[in-house]
Image 1 (cartoon, rainbow, N blue to C red):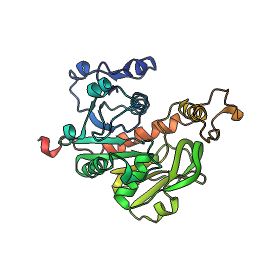
Image 2: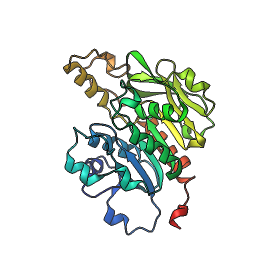
Image 3: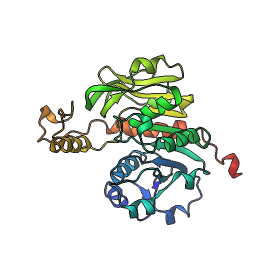
Length: 305
């Protein structure tokens, strides 16, 4: 089944060329079906790139997914046009009276700041609290995972000696949990961050269940409240060349950056990287939509009856 998006969203053409089934509003309105309502709070600076990555991830399911994009009101985006934001994004005051089946809060390039120093932190706290009553299940990605663990459970992040950057091997810790159904025992996933929440602190928090972790990269996947909160410390949504572009960007800026681990063939950055994590990324989002959104959300929210 398709993902439903606005007919003139720029990434729609790219998705269609990749043979991903998308449906515009006109066609969807003629179907007698209850679509899954997903809200994406996009905190990344390159919003269109993140839109494409997440829409790809949500497309591999028999469910019809209706996606709404949200931007924070207390931060001025510098890398996305005002016209794009005005046309395709809404703000929290415009959406806070709605109920959503699922929500994704993306990462953001602010991890080296204290949480309270981020200009939209108060707004994000309000949104995270709001999800407890207005969203069936929320995925927190990368920096958002650190923010969620800090806000909900008081777990502090710490700065790494150098950037965690590349593809890292992870092992599944609790195969009985449906979120990791279909995962291999070990799998690769991308990480790109300067900070971490210590894995020992996460294991010590009795409210959290660790589902996948890495000896080198630490936490990849954890959940709480029977799946109402899901924390993904890596970037399973990344495209084939996302790490390559980050590497080339940092090199061009003269920043200290190592080759991304396990990424370029033979560590030769002139060679095309192999896409080695897409299957598990698709499985993660499909399991989330099926077991923690579709299976748990009410067909009609109480306030809508």
